[in-house]
Image 1: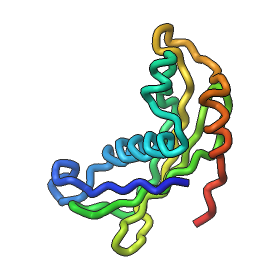
Image 2: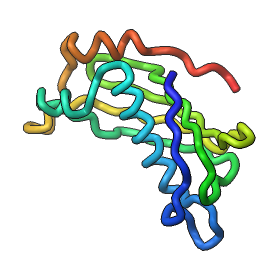
Image 3: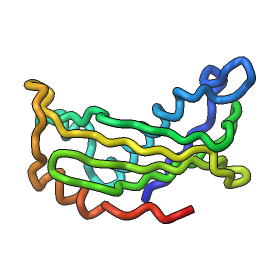
Length: 139
């Protein structure tokens, strides 16, 4: 598990001062990239090997609003890993009170950047990712 932190910026809010729902997906992406970096897998390294990992499915369950300047902690878990895809789950909390703001999940497939076809990871990327797989504990 990795915890990423971000503060809600003013431009990410709506006219009510609440973070717009679309930002949750950006924050999930930021947390996912940080998670991978923490285990030694970078997007640049994968792209240099012609591998990208587009989203195949994404979901978010909104529990409470995030407001301007709230510090958010995004717990990120790699819960499923195959050579062709990975699944992450997220839990977003407000740092000041620990309130659960949202939960989410993303499913990515591994694809050749040049051909657009699904590829299977070799051990260079697969092994460190497989070693990082864990279940997300229940709330």
